[in-house]
Image (cartoon, rainbow, N blue to C red):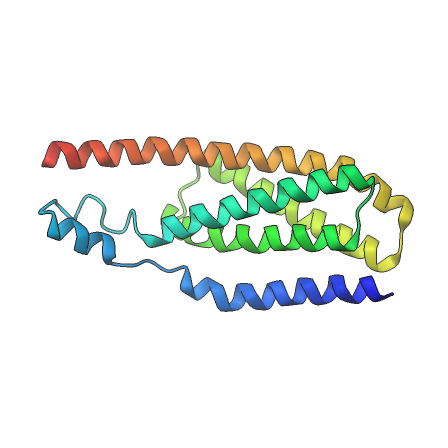
Length: 183
């Protein structure tokens, strides 16, 4: 009974954290100032690269650590436990903090990474919600099935993570090439 409340309180605390953190994930102007100081054209990166990108990369990396740890711990234990579920909820909080600024940056453009990322995010939400219901309901048979489901969701999420890295590296390479050509 105690673990049910711990899980519910953890999920609630993470949602409150998200509500307070998301406004801090907005764009900054320090990159433009740095470009002006170096006499580089600011129009190249204006609105495209700023501190929200760095915060998003950090948030996605933290989500990766949480999801990886959660999956490995769950496989070691052999079933979903409430404290492992709290790790998955923390990973989701980091992911949402990273995804919101990136979605704003994409300006609604639909890409392969965007589709895979949306599927990965949806699966993580379904996974966490299902696991929370199973933990709160005390459904041990279902909780023992979660390591396989968690691994499947994790693999799909990692594909989204990798496609995001590839898309980001390709985009950054093009931006830096424009800066070099302009200088």
